[in-house]
Amino acid sequence: MEPIISVRSLDKTYSGGFNALKSIDLDIQRGEIFALLGPNGAGKTTLISIICGIVNPGQGSVIVNGYDIQRDYRRARREIGLVPQEIATDSFESVLGAIKFSRGLFGKPPNPSYLEKILRQLSLWEKRNNKIVTLSGGMKRRLMIAKALSHEPSVLFLDEPTAGVDVELRQDMWEMVRELRESGVTVILTTHYIEEAEEMADRVGVINRGELVLVEDKKTLMQKMGEKELSLQLPMPLERIPDSLSDLPLRLNGDGSELIYRFDIKSENTGIPEFLRRLSSANIEFRDLYTRESSLEEIFVNLVHSARHEGEEQFSGEAQP
Amino acid sequence: MNWYGIAAIYKFEMSRTWRTLIQSVASPVLSTSLYFIVFGAAIGSRMGDIEGVSYGAFIIPGLIMLALLGESISNAAFGIFFPKFSGTIYEVLSAPVSPFEIVAGYVGAAATKSILLGLLILATARFFVDYDILHPFWMITFLVLTAVSFSLFGFIIGIWADDFQKLQIIPLMIITPLTFLGGAFYSISMLPEFWQKVTLFNPVVYLISGFRWAFYGVADVNMGLSVGMTLLFLFLCLTTVWWIFRTGYRIKT
Image (cartoon, rainbow over all chains, first blue to last red; front, top):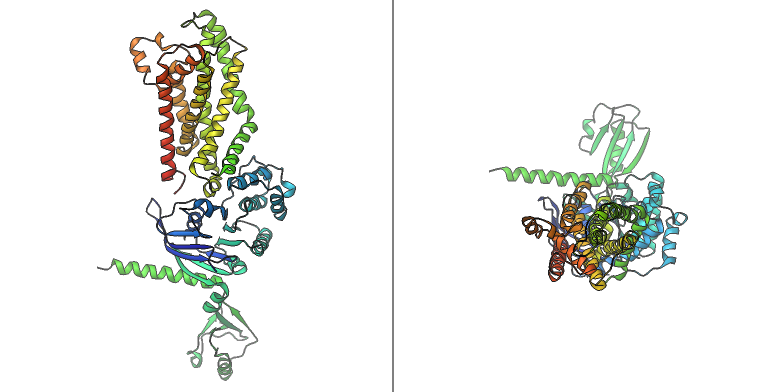
């Protein structure tokens, strides 16, 4: 199937000389939830802002549902709803007035029953005649989503949807995003909360220093990059790993009462039986054991870290005469 | 053409007017009435006619222009400055509206507002003095042209301004003096010859003169020149707006 968004060799350098995006290639599939992950300043918002028309693109092209965002900007933008990171509303406008405005702006004829449906979905219908200034922070955020959905877009961008949002609202938001996906809307969200990507996304893209470091199916990613750890709680703390076990991928935690064995879940032979045998011949006892999968967070930190490391190496390499 | 988009911006801006009725309509009407009382009724009764027009009636076109320029600029400037300031401009930028449609919405609303205001002041003047309108067609033409040009000018200021001070500074420091010195309260023929020449560099002179001609058939400068200068200013503003959207100046990075 044709991707709904197709980004090719997209480059952006701000007038101050900051190179925010470096030749980004990215395809977003129809109907998926795609999480764009990256530390602050990595280029997430720049990428979204270019696709939505808020920031001028540099080199490269972006096609949304078959329409080029520059040549055919009207049709491209009609496909897109954007919920920006910052809450920005007209305080003295009413809730209903605000979403009517949004719908009109996107060139759609009035449709009161559709707007009512959205407001009900987002629990804002009771507040429809209230001025925005009287709404709570959570309601304002939901209003931003209602505005973005008012023109029936096929792609919804959520820029840091749950930044500074309490746990309950975050759960609601996730629930809502899933419902949207079921109704056929493609959702692209940026976040620096890994758990959000882990919880919601079908696919994950990691962006760092303007480069797309990785794009992967979330499950594959977690399998591919995932390592498991077997942790043993020892009744008698060890001072150091015995020599007879030094060839194994082991480490001691804390005061030496936790012995951790690392293994790869992909490999057929995890080595666990042998490890346990050798443990017993070394006369090490344990009172409890459990295994733990590495989270997306660790994968992410590793990726960003290694990218940074490479960057530094490259830099020091260039500095040499 | 995204008509719904233009209508959305236009309606939004007009509803801002109704929300702030006192500030946007009542206060200019009140201050103009004060001018009528002070200059028209109190001082005017001691002044002779100017070119056959009583002083009270003579200042009406100038007073309307004074309000029209100030209000056109401040309405349009605030209309576009505030979304920039509050961040809601993201929505307009991400919407399928062309620069022309954005300008039509914002400038159209600001111009509508100041035209209504001009007519309201004209009606208010009836309570204080008698006046004729010899050329109603040209009166409306000048009213509309001036409202549109200066709303465009205000739009440019609103884009350019990045704080509230800059928003105020041009109307306050440039437009108001130019209007006062542009013959709102006097005929420039009353000035010494040297200052008459200097005054011709003031673009507002042409607006007021043309507008007054539409009322009473008397003018400081040739009426064709007045129309020409107004159109020239309109053209300059349009070119600037076109350049703003082309480069994304102060609205897109």
